[in-house]
Image 1: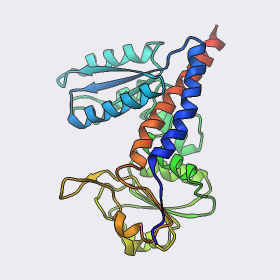
Image 2: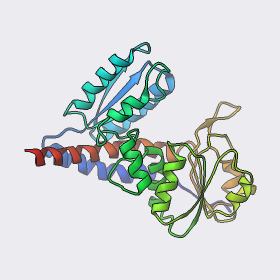
Image 3: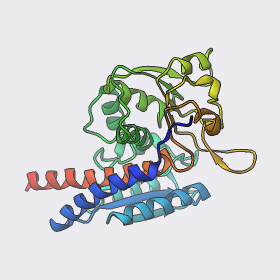
Length: 290
């Protein structure tokens, strides 16, 4: 008996409605929310993400600007270009596509970015906020997208045993902190965990974010568990798939998110929501300074 499929489209629609109201309110105050992407070079995966982000931003009335910098740019020129965008009062959200070419120092930029404009959580200030349970900053978009999805589908987390598979700073670690804030009992696992199947079987909720195609199989999931698949992989047939073996696991899970069509799409909506929120915060700061 297959469980509920947690589709991203429904979460996105609910978020879009709220964002549209907020953007209309900002525009009535003469503020057009602007998101700025900074891209070094033109990698195909970056361009694909950019197209998706543009579509999502424009659908709620956010303007998206892009600065493309040459791959052989010096650190000094890179910092100058970044500072210009960071200091621009008309820019509300900044996203830097990473990883950067090896010659560039990402840490210097992460230290420079205005934490309010840091909509994808690269600033040490925002990272520290996530880890201290302070929701005043912007959390990493993918981790927050998982939380948005669980919340939308009414998955109660308080007191629940949750296993997070994956320990990246993009998903696993911040997601564990956000789950703890909701009073979940969190077990962190990764590719070197000795008894990964055992750790998953005892979980009532599993978040799979290790980046290995189909590594979570039906025998690792207890009957009635909730499974959020954050993985984006390409299998042998060249098809997009997650970290979870969807056909097998969906027979046992009470609720499961698919790939594609699950958490991934919600991520760009969270990014858009962060830009709207940044525009609201910056507007309040401007009003207070006047």
